[in-house]
Amino acid sequence: MPTVALLRGINVGGNRKVPMIRLKAVAQSLGLTKVQTYIQSGNLVFEGQVSRSELEAAIEREFGFAVPVTLRSAEDWQAVTLHNPYLQQAEADGSKVHVTFLDAEPSEAGLAALRAVNSGADEWTHDGLHLYLHTPGGLGHSKLNPDKLKVGATTRNWRTVLKLSELAGI
Image (cartoon, rainbow, N blue to C red):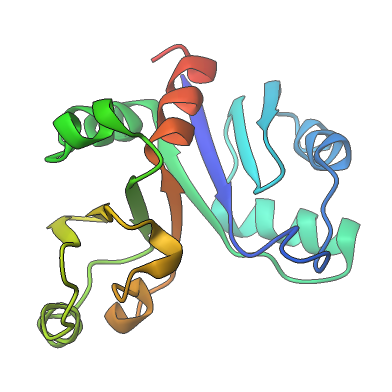
């Protein structure tokens, strides 16, 4: 079964550079197979077993800095694609719908902090370890900030979510 790995905070503004060819080699060195990468933001699809901590440690050894990684099984990934409450908006413009992948369930206080944001036309829906965002003005202009949840998180737009589904054969 495929697994999707999402790396957080790499290749942004020329900092924390992680070339995808080297990332792929790191994954293969851990015995992972059918390794594929997608765009420079740190998206990896593979088959095989590896823990989050093992993958993070291997990446840190190779690149010299810590990179948080979020893992999702094929089953979890499929659920993400099926439960998107903003599918109609995503079909109109997949760059305006995002999924934030959370490392842990946010507390009620974290959710309340996000609810308190005057987000204008932006919408969000929390579903377990995922936060679905619809930002008609674009994520870069949104006041919605998943950091308010106080859990590790990384965000991908809907187009990327669908491309990773395709690469994983989901």
